[in-house]
Length: 356
Image (cartoon, rainbow, N blue to C red; front, side, top):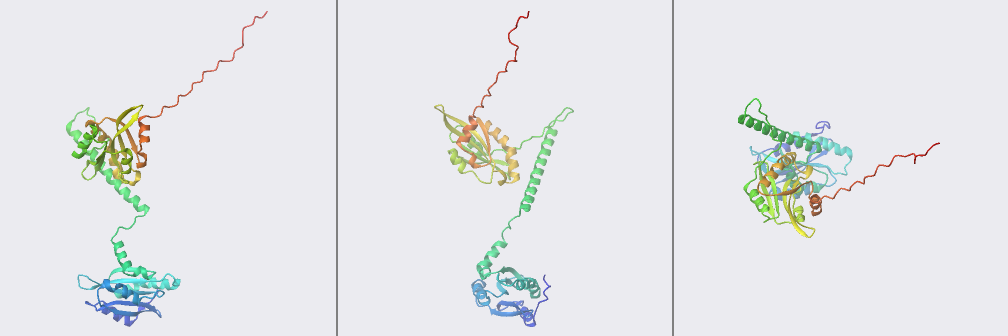
């Protein structure tokens, strides 16, 4: 729609544009309006102080709330050729007639083309508050931020992550097969590719698990470092199940080892409980696959350090980690015994009778 209106700058505005494009331009702002099917200069202001100090006062003096216009506002920044950089403001009030809105919207690109200067920032607004300095700074801040993703873009990003993970596992399998082939070669050789992934425990994780095995602490949380491919200590403490549940992360899996103290039939017992916590689709595909694949190797490593794991639990929400749920896993309710019905006797003919 850039040239459909046929509206062009008049001679006076074209001359003004030449002045605005000159190095060390003394002017600060130029207001442009559409009058009698022409783009005309309806106001000019010279620079007095800095861009930030003058911004609001200049816009307020040039702007009329019910009157649409364009404003070219010179910033104090210049490009490599010492040409000033400009802020281009398009103000189209919300209560304007639809036809006038369309005319100003369709003429905007035409004006920018004829100006031909260095436009650094472009702002559009329907109220004065949107184009004041606060609106300008918010616009600059949003320019540098990552735009929100649509559902299809999120799905595409997840698929790309999944491809990376699949390639990682393929390479791992190839390496394992190659190592096996190098170690033993024969006609009857069978090759077995490991179905699990193993990230070794770091020193802090090993030390914490040993403390838990000796019951000097009651809780250890482990996390995977995907960059370094290690299993790291996330937390070690003397915490209750309720406290552990309250401190679980909302978007990242964890391996939890809990020394669960409880009273059973008058005696106090302590069992080691392993909890695999994975908050569903709140974490990335790569995290879910790596944590799931490393789970058994982490449990094996913990058992080799002396932990006697009584039961293993998997949860997807911190709310599922309660003493009641742990007790139900330790002492599952007995299944109701089915009542066996005796087979009814076959219908008889009664006592034998002598027939004479």
